[in-house]
Length: 417
Image (cartoon, rainbow, N blue to C red):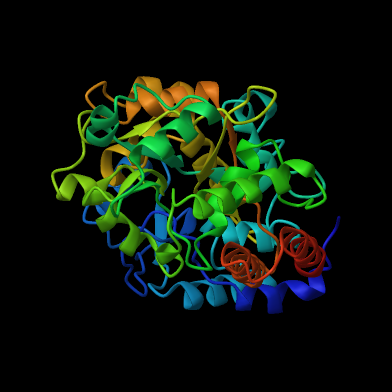
């Protein structure tokens, strides 16, 4: 369904960068290069200590001189500035880094250049996760409007010490999952732990809907009901706790580190666990996402920031050259080397990422075995997420019935699209 461009400005200004994705470094307000330049990049990475080295590599690799403007630190301010820039046809910036929230809001606005014929051609596009490309950076006309700069999975994490304690070798199916729940839970410990604060639980609602083969945009789908009843059952049986309703990842991770949870879903590569000396194959580690769906499929989310081309740009040839570089090995290798951004192309990750990287094996398995998707978002992103989190919490508390939840959820899909 096409969105009316007239609504885009007000929707974008109301959206924030939440949803519990991996943290982005703090950014300086602005930096200006001097002298002639081939294009201007609006970047979120300028205060990374290795940004200048990254820029030097990119300029050397492309033969371009790149002017850089640093994006604001505050997410709302950043969103407002990008919205104003694009909506007014400001041509002073050529390439912009945007997150999934902004992509959802902007991709059908006409403010971003389609890249199908120049950068994200069929042969290149097929190297990226199809679900993510289709859902997050493809507009209603079928034009891809961005180049993903990394892959970051909402991974399934387990505590191997707890698994060894209860004698569970793997959690591969729904039956395995429930056996683990029963074996682990009790005496203040829970089989499953979540981040169920109302603006964060969206990630897990959508994850379980996908795991059961449902459709987050269609709450008449019986698999959606099955997924929600499954989570409700975990609460009723004491396999997960209502105490986590106010928890964001900042509260969930310490509980996981302290051995309060047997498994959970979490973004990133485990920095908090590593800092607590609890990251490792014999401690806390990523595992394959269990198979719950009847068709045998496995589902997982990835998020990213994408490079997009301002439709008002007056340096489109140079901008296309930059974007083409970022889709290739050299561009992705520079981002991995300097920013620790895991390559968005699985084929290039195999070449770029050393075998010593502990996430390489599981990330390769995710890319090969899972249906990799982008998170389901609507243009009024935060309103939709908050509303869904609110009724989810009400259902988990038994304040509303499952039928009430499903009816209200479908209403929100229709209201916020």
